[in-house]
Length: 216
Ligand SMILES: [Zn+2]
Image (cartoon, rainbow, N blue to C red):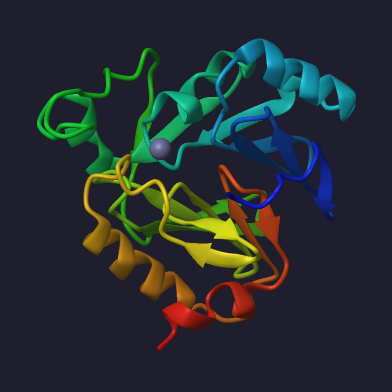
């Protein structure tokens, strides 16, 4: 059992969780626009969630995707004015170079245009917000985590939370769990994290407790 996922709403200043039930995505407010982290499953439910938050989906101009699984990219059409980004390393998941499950299924090419991100790339938003793109492979080959202002960490499916602790569940759904372990250990070294945000088990404000066993 994963932790109960928190409801759609503001979870920090200028930062929102969107809970579609099965999966969470996140939204960051910049000066007069928004940056989405993953896009959930269905455009319709994403638009409804944003309406509840009084946020105009047309103001989302950037979608940063943690990886190419359907439940992270499916709602992308909710953001008609946004440019989508995904890790360059994830492209092997999209062109059938790397299999998704047990060597028998493959992710489809993304059904929209996108630009690619490099490991360690830094994005400066409105000269005020900095987003660092961290290469954290394992769940998929090019899974990427995003670090906002050295404070909010979004990890997609790289790990989940159980009773507040980062765990390596979804093993069968990940392509290399040893690689995943290494990625989580790298993330655990980060300091000053105020929120650890996962896709399928909500978030925690207690990063050091969540990552304790990964730090040794
Ligand atoms: Zn996934």
